[in-house]
Structure formats: structure tokens, C-alpha cells
Image (tube, rainbow over all chains, first blue to last red; front, side, top):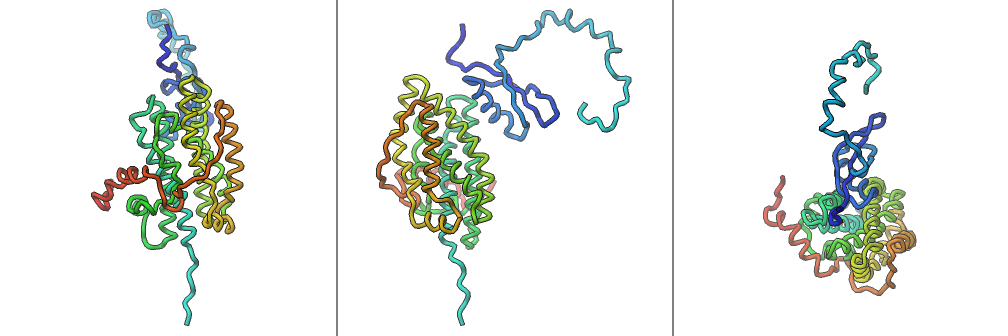
Amino acid sequence: MQDNRQWPLFEVFIRARGGLDHKHVGSLHAADARMAVDHARDLYTRRQEGVSIWVVPSKEITASDPAETDSLFEPARDKIYRHPTFYEIPDEVKTL
Amino acid sequence: MTLPVPPDTSALFRYVLRLGDLSLVLGQRLGEWVGHAPALEEDLGLANVALDLIGQARLLLSYAGEIEGRGRGEDDIAFLREHGEYLNPVLVEQPNGDFGQTILRQVLIDAFQLELYQRMMASTDQRLAEIAAKSVKEVRYHLRYSSGWLVRLGDGTADSHARVEKALESLWPYTVELFAEDELDRTMADQGVAPRLSEVKMAWLERIDEILSEATLRRPPDRSHAWHGKRGQHSEHLGYILAEMQHLQRTYPGARW
């Protein structure tokens, strides 16, 4: 049963500056999405950490099952040829 | 032989004190919430607003010290004045009450500061124009925060509605002072230093009415008022605020950390 005494949990994603991805920075409680954005601004951008905020209700996130780690991730381990390590990266590319 | 008469800056000095003391006293009041807010997230939210206000106070009181030209810095002016020398409106010294009352007081002041500073960006006084331009960004967020909460509480449960309604009844009379134009306000407006308070009031009322209606609250009628915080006549609450705020500087003069 849902506990109504506690605001629902939101996951917070912050974009540090233009051109970068939003990164998961943590979670917080809020009554709704608008309040979650305000709280995220107050909690996670106090020290100029970001220029954009996303919030997502934690319950909307579907996660992989830790019990399935072997079958999900083991098969990739011996396929190093999938890493693009054979390319020369031009100096001009900064944020790769 | 006659000496050149220096320009009379005492009016500007007092006007800047009014602005600075409003931010200083409200910032101090909000600081009382730290560690006591209803949720950790709100604790930080209120503290952020408080710190913005103290930041405004620092800029304004430093400037006041320069105008005065007697070598007083921001700390001297903030911590070493007497009761009657503070020129904030009495609204900002009213007690925090419950969270709803704090939020309601905040909406009233945030909207006032927003309308005031938006216009003061065009001040003939360069310094005030710069301070206004910096502050207006902060104040816009303060109002987003406080009005968001007021709508939640007003349009929330029967209990939350009743609480903010009661806060509105008790705090509304203090808003009259914000717009009660006196000689000093008129002088500043004539010189283009500050906007006309009548103009600020119209914009403020429009904004407040919009927020109150969304919060399903009704604006009480204006009443004549008997306080003049802007002239240094305060309610009994300011003394307690000053006692706490000035304690350290009075006990250990010149203390720094």
C-alpha cells in the first residue's frame, strides 16, 4: 500500500552545460513534478552544477533485475572488438 | 569665502536603508526555519531564499555606508544600529507562525520586491540599477517558490486552506505600509531613483489577485495602519530579532570568522 504521509520519490537528472547529457545526480521527495523541479534546483544546483533539470517519478523507472546480471551482461565481456578503440580521435572533439 | 555645499545624500542613504533592512530582517526571519522546516527539501528551499536576501542586504547596506561616507561598513550598519534606526516595513518582522503564514508573508514581499526591482533597473542611480538587475532574478524564483506553495495550501485540504486564510487576514493590514508613499518615497521617485509606489502597487495588486484567486483565497479590505517601520517605528517583534542577530557583534565587537 502507498504511504501517503511521505511525498513520492523523484529521480533527478542535471545537464552540467549545453551539449552534455543529463546525468543522474540523486533523488528527492516532492508532491508533484513541478515541486520536484524546484527542489532539484535548490538541492542540486546550488553550486552552479547545471543549466537544465529533468525529474522522473522513481516508480516510472523500470530496472534490470540484479539476479539476471550474469545472463544480461556476461556475454559482452569477451567481445572487446565492439569497443571503438581502433580509431584516432581528432583533437577538435572535446566531449566524446 | 564660501565652501562648496556637498550634495545632500541623506535622503538616498535612508532610502537605501529601507531596501536593505527589508532584505536583512526578512532573511534573518527565514533563517529561523533552518532545521525546523516540514521537509528536508523545504529546509534547503527556505534557506536558499534567506541567503539570497542576506546577499541583497549586504550589497545595499555596503552602498548605504558609502553614501553616508563616515567609514561604516555593511557589518557596522547591519549589527550595530539601534532599534529605531532600522527602516524596514513591519511586515517582514512579523513572526514566522506556521509554514503557511511564512509562505503567505513571502508571497506578499516577493511580489513587492519583484515589481519594485523590475522598475528600479531603470534607476537614475547606477548602483541601485545594478543591484536591482541582480536581485530581480533571485526574486523571480522566490515568488515562483512561494506562490507555488500558496496555491497548494490554499487549494489544498480544509485545514491548509483555513490556515493560510487566517494568515492572510492577519498579515494583509501590514501590506498597506509598503505602498504608503511619504516624503522620502516622493523625493526618490521625483529624482528617478525609485519608481512611483502607486505604479508598483497597481502591478503588485494585479499579481497578488491572480495568485490569491488560484489559491481560492479572497483579498481582505485595506485598513488604515498605525505602524511606520519605514520611519523606524516598529512592532514589538523587531527587538527580539535584533537581540538574536546582534548578540555576537555586541558581545565580541569586531568578531570575524
